[in-house]
Image 1 (cartoon, rainbow, N blue to C red):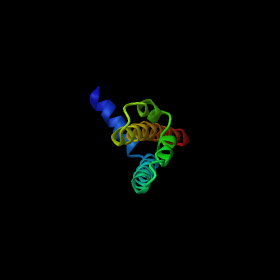
Image 2: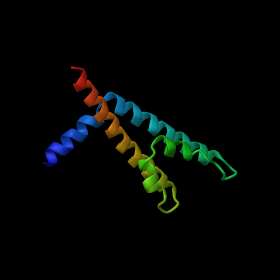
Image 3: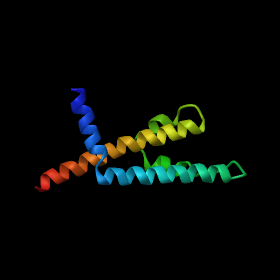
Image 4: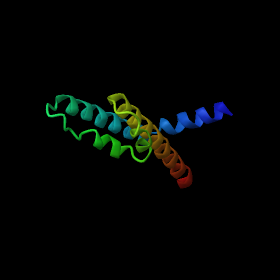
Length: 98
């Protein structure tokens, strides 16, 4: 059964739409980290943008202890969950259009 689950997960995560979504989320995360690091006032709200782009799954882990690694973990988890759903939907729509 694990081969089936990992095979399906690999198939939906390698869909073009899912890969584009993951690239956008990675770009937003890098931008937010750079913008926060360059902000001298310490009041940067740039981290909100990648969290909203990967919501609702990223909001589950966002309330963990306050550290930059928790932001990265929350965004990565949310992006992977959403990319799997996007890939699954794209695959289902392709199958339906045949």
